[in-house]
Length: 229
Length: 137
Image (cartoon, rainbow over all chains, first blue to last red):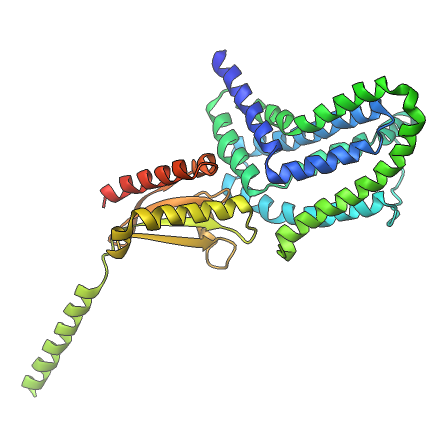
């Protein structure tokens, strides 16, 4: 039992270490700004924070499962994700940024799922946050690859409950965003009488988020394509 | 005619023997630092520390051809096989023990990632591991 607990804590700690390593830190900052654009609606920020973390957890669990069960080989998977996902991230972030700034207008097809749920989820940005978490997790950089493939996976392979480790690790990597979402949920609720001000703030936050996404996108674009700095 | 042929054979034999004597030892330790096209600041530090630790602590071994440091870009054509050979998942420092042109064993020094924040510990770790490999030459 102790061994299992130590394993879980190690997985969580590795996740936290990952969350503050350069690439995931940049993506977490982008996500925090993404959540901030709904700052006047603490419930939405909170839900999106959870959705983002769930997105990260799902990506790691799927990847972990495929590796632990030897469906994917570690070196090839690791090199592929580092080479192509991180390369794709720059253009993706820049496009999202341009959409947020309304410089590009996206017309997404309407899905015929329950309208009530659809509205709530899309208003909360939960689906978007989930997708962000999923994509960001798969964009591995050297340090995050060392932590996931070199530390977490060997740890998971040694434990009978190893398949759950990527799940715990996912929670750790999303912790800064979760902490932010909880703080906003608690903090903004206390500032309820400032609602008008916060609603105004949302407009600017949306613009700021667009700029931050473009900046983070440029960071990835430079790192993987242009190599100017 | 026979004399000429014998003389030619002797000269050829002499040249062959001298070349063999000049050939560097085919047994050595190779320290590979594997990187890719994307080079993060920490990755550059890993390469710099590895190079420094090796070049400053093993001057004699390098001069004698017993130890070599090589930085290899795995994204370059022809180097892809290293990924499979050494099961690489990120930037890595790998020691390879070669005897009579054959690799006997190798080790991925994965702890370089733990020590990259502490130069001295990094040097000590790499130096110790290389010493262990050199013992087996």
